[in-house]
Amino acid sequence: MSTAEQTPTPQRAQEPTPKPGAARRRKTISLAVQAGVFVLAIVLLAVLVDWTALGENVFNFGAVGAMFPDIILVGLGNTLFYTVTSFVLGLLGGMVLALMRMSAFPPYRWIATAYVEFFRGVPALLVFLALGYGVPFAFGVSWPIPLVVCLALGLVASAYIAETLRAGLQAVPKGQTEAARSLGMPAWRAMVTIVIPQAFRIVLPPLTNEVILLTKDSSLVYVLGLAVFQYDLTKFGRDGISSLGAGMTPIVVAGVLYLVITVPLSLLARRFESTSARKKV
Amino acid sequence: MSRTHHRVVAAASLCTGALALSGCAVIGGTSSSKAVGSDEHLSSSYQLVEPGTLTVCSDIPYPPFEFEQDGKITGYDIELVHAVAEKLELDVDVIDSSFEAIESGASLTGCDLNASSISITEARQRVMAFTSPYLDDDLVLIARKDRGFTSVEGLEDARVGVQTATTGAEYATEQGLNVVQYEDGGMQVQALKAGNVDATLGNQTVLLYELKDDDRFEIVEELPTGEQLGMAVGAEKAQLLSAVDRALQELRTEGKVAELQDKWFGHVQEAYR
Image (cartoon, rainbow over the protein chains, first blue to last red):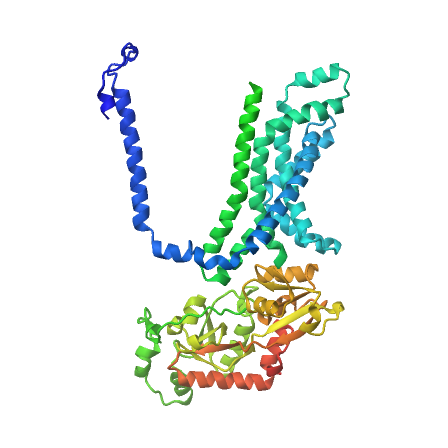
C-alpha cells in the first residue's frame, strides 16, 4: 500500500493522466478484492463442507487398499492399452481422411467430409454399442473386446484427428511444396517427405489433446461387458463402490490414476509447443 | 432382479401424512361401522379405503410385473390382483406409487394392497403383512440350446454374462465361472442374443421375461435363492389379509397362478405347478 503513496517517477508524470497514483491504487484495490473473495470462498468451503462425511465417503483411502495392485496392473494397464491402440488407428485413419479431404478428386472429399461429420457428431458410446452388439447381430461374429475398443475409439478419433491434420497440412507454406516440385520431386514425395513432417510438428500439441480425450473415452468400454482381466480404471472404481464400503473413494482413486496418465501428457504437449515455437523464430 | 432395497420404517410412521384419508386404518379403522348385511359386512370387515373397490398400490412401470400396454396397466402382478379381486367380488383401482412408499409401508395409508414385485424380507414384514408368496425370485442360468449345457458345472470354458452387483454376479464369481459383467439387465440379455457370451445368469424375474419368446435359448438350471415375492396389506387388516391369502391359494390350486407365470415368463415354477 505504501508504494501507492510514493511520488510517481518523472516518466509517469509526463503522461496525460490527471492523478498519477490513481491507476496504481485502483489496481491494488482490485487485487485486494480478488484476494478477499478467494479467502472468503476458502473459509466458506471449510465451514460448509461436512469434513467427517467427506472423509468417510470420498477420501477414505484407508479402506481401498484391496484395490491395489490390481487397479494399477490391470486397470491402468488396460486403459493405457485401449488408449494407445485406438490412437494408432485414429492417427492412420485421420491421415488418410485428411489427405482425402484435400484430394483433387471430389468423391474422396465427399466421403471424407461425410465420415468426419458422422463420427464427430455421434456419441462415442453409440459407436461402442454398434460395434459391440450390432456387428455380432449382423454378421454372427463377436470380436474380442480389445479389438472392439480399438475400432470404436479409433473410428471416432480418426474423425477428429483428420480435421487437426488437415489444418496442419494447410498451414505448411505452399512454397515448401513448390520448392520440392521445382527440384524434381514428384507430388507424393513432396507430400510425404516435406509437407507431412512439417505438418506433424505443427499439430503435435492438439494431437496430445486427442490422446487425453481418448484416455478418458476408453472408460466407455463398460457398455461392452467386461471379464475381470479386461477391467479398465473406471470399472475398477465403480466396482469398488459396491464392494469396499468406502463410499465414492474408489472412484477418486480411479480419477487420480487417470491424472497419472493425462498430466504428464499435458506437460509433454506444453514442451512440444515451446519447442515448435522456438524453431519458428 | 427384484427390488431388494431394505428400508426399515417404524410402524408408527404408517399413517403419517395420511390423516385426511378416510381409510387410514390405524386411526379410522375401529370407528368403521359394522353393517349387518352379508355383502356389506364382508366389505367393511376388510376396512377398504374405497368400499367395494380393492385399491392397489404399484410402482409402474416395472415390466413384466406392472406396466402400461396399449393404454392399459397390465402385467403379472396386475392380472393376479384382478383375479384376486374377482374372487372377493371387488373392483380394482390401481394407483401408481413410488417403490420407496410401497416398501416402507407408507403407501398402505391410501391403498388396501401393495402389489409391486416386492421381495418378502424381515424388515418389510415389520411394517406390513405379507400374503403367501406368488413367485419365487430364483436365479436362472440360460444358454443357447445348441451349446448343450446341462448345469453350472459344465461351464468352465464358457463366458457367462451377469449383471454387476447382483446376487447372480456374486454366485457366478463364487463358482469360479468365467464372468462377464454388464451394467444393466438389458445389456446382459442383448449380449446373450448377440452371442457375446455363451450363457447368462441372473434373477428369473428379469431374464425369463426378456427371453421367453426366443426359442434359441433354454433354461439350463434353476438355482433357488429363497427369495420370494408377496403382496402386502396393512399390518392391522387381518380380515383382508386372510381373504386375499385365501383367494391366492385358490388361484394357485386352480392353476391360475401357473397360467399367469407361463404367460409372462414363459415358464412355470415347480412350486406353483
